[in-house]
Amino acid sequence: MNLQIIQADHEEELVGFYEILMILIQYKYHVVIITLVAIIFSLTYALWSSPVYQAETHLLPPHTRDIAGLNIIEDSYDEQQVYEIFTNTLESRAIRFQFFRESEQFAGMFTDNISENNLNELFEEKFNSKIAVKKNRAGTGRNLLVITLTSDDSNYAARTLNSFVNFVNQSAIDSLVRNVESILRNNIADLQLEIESLRTTAVKMNIDEIAALEDSFKTAEKLGITKAIANGNYASEPNNDDASEVKLKLQYEQAYRRGTDALSAELEVVRNRKNLDFMIPALRNLENQISIISAKLKRIAAQSGIKTVTVDRPALDENKRIKPDRKKIMIIGSISGFVLGMIVALLLNFLSTVRRK
Image (cartoon, rainbow, N blue to C red; front, side, top):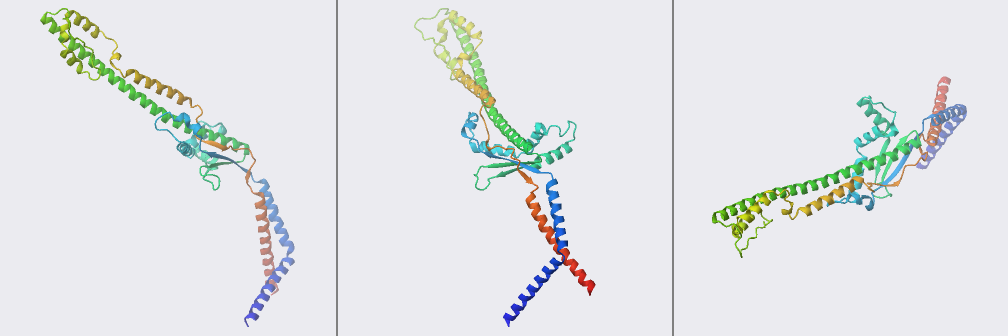
């Protein structure tokens, strides 16, 4: 019983397929004409649609030698840190907008008196919406960046994309250099502040020495000592470690025993000192540190050999059209035309049957 039912269903399917086939044969001209019209329409669209080309560039982290110029401070950079800064700069809308305004690739697209809203719309339409960044593409390396740019001109897309990568690289370098320069200038400012503090201390030490000599002079004058008393230890050189020790040293060594003549002469010399740098033993070392840091500032300002990215594959004028896909359009158009032809044929057969009844 079941076998008979299955056979009957199969026969009905065959009859249904046969009827459809007969209908298509009966209205074959309609099917063919509609299919041809669809093919012609698809071909026309594929040929007359404006082509869209895509330029592509591949980027990798910089080499160690490319960032050596940055590592002149204690907190140095590694390749991944620099590459991350490049990536952040690449995705910055402000950087993209700056490139759009300054690049010669977009010269003539807008005037100087264009409104801010219109300029932003133009930027989105002509550049920002056409660029794409793909990270970590499967099978190509963990740090690979693939940047694409679409345009109706293949050569223009390649040139613009390469210019943009160079612009982002330079912007990232400028940011890193400014950071290093800021650190170096702060180091110089700290050293200069230390020198200024030491010079202030030297002035105080000199004043203390003058006060101590004046006291000794008065003591010698009261005692009537004009010439130095023999066999005395009269050293009065200041101890630079602590300015307060100057007066104590002079007192303990009985500087008044030098006599008023010597003390008067020394007072005149001490009072007329123009430069107290000799009283700062660490001064030359601090000045040397400033000279070294200043040389580093000149070196970093030159930006010699610094790169924040390695261009593994630059954008080339490959005439790589991504739209329209003519082959795909023709296939879809042909299938759509044939299906539409079948529907029309079945509809015409249905209407003919209705009229006969």
